[in-house]
Structure formats: structure tokens, C-alpha cells
Image (cartoon, rainbow, N blue to C red; front, side, top):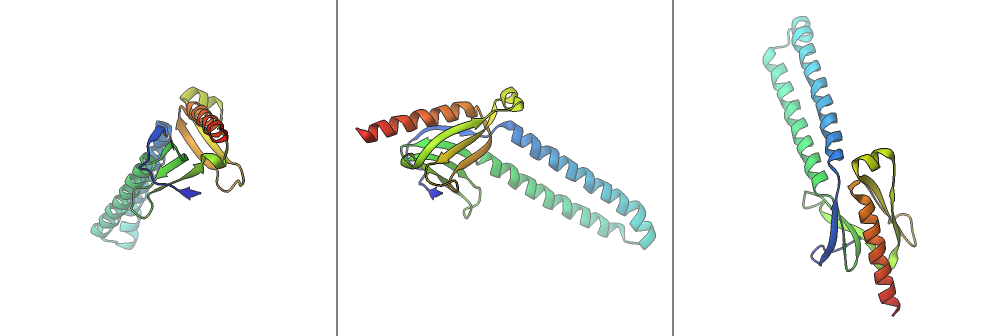
Amino acid sequence: MEVENTSKNVFKSFRISWTVYVRVIVVFAIKIAILFGLYYFAMHVLQSEFAIPVNIINIIAISLLAVGLIFFTINILTLRSIVLYTNEDGVWVYRGIFPWSRGASGVKWRDLDSASYITKFSSWLLQTYTIKVEHRFTKDNEIVLNSVYKGQNAAMHINELHKEFVSNAQE
């Protein structure tokens, strides 16, 4: 995929849905529950059997919790940074929170085949669709983005703009 400058005029942008955040929060809650289970086990079994000092168990538990919170925060911020947008050059996905991972990749209008969205009952119910922007020449440069809020509108918008740019290019 080609990397594009995001400073050009953005026609329309679309973000991922809240449903993705729910999944991340549920996974984090399960990890915290497992951590508390391990902490309970360490305090009641390991501490009495192997005479491990309580301070060491607490330090390990707090360290694991802090690392988990850091990764949870990074995950949420990374998801929040994802934006599907269109400009005069094509369709792009911007993502990343760190300077070395930030950027946009996408498909130029001249190389675009079509945009579609995948429907399921849950997609229809929650208005979150998987978007697929296909490249004319290769399947390696496709954009596939899950859980785009009102993704059906994104696919229609992309196809309308593509039709407009192709007809303008032929004139």
C-alpha cells in the first residue's frame, strides 16, 4: 500500500465503532480477573508453602497490573487513531499513536476497483460493517477494515467518488 500525506483536503472520514472498544474492555477485564486469581493463589498457597514474602508478591502483582494498564491504554489509543478517509488522491486508512507507527496507507483512485461492505445480523443491528476496498491489480494492497460505524455509507461514498473521478479522468 502506498503511504500518502494526510494534509490534503479530506472529503469524508469514517471511524471504527464503539463495539471494538467493548471487546478490548472485556478482554482486559478477563485478564484482571485472572491476575486477581493468581494473586489470591500466591497469597494463600505459595506464601504459606514456600514462605515467599508478602512484599515480593505485592510488588509482582502491582508490576503486572501496571504493565497490563499500559498495554490496555496503548490498545485503546491505537484503536481510537484509526480513520478511514477519502481525499482527491484516493481512499486511505490513517492509524498509529507512536511516531514510528503513524501513517496512512491506501488505494489511489486510478487503482481502485470497488468498495464493498460485508453484512451480518450483528452488523445490521449495530450499524458496524466490515469495509473492503479492492485494488484493481493486486489483492495485496486491499483495505479491509472491521467494525466501521455506518460502513455501508462509507462504501457507497467511496464508489460514488470513484465513479466521479473515473468519469472526470476520461473527459
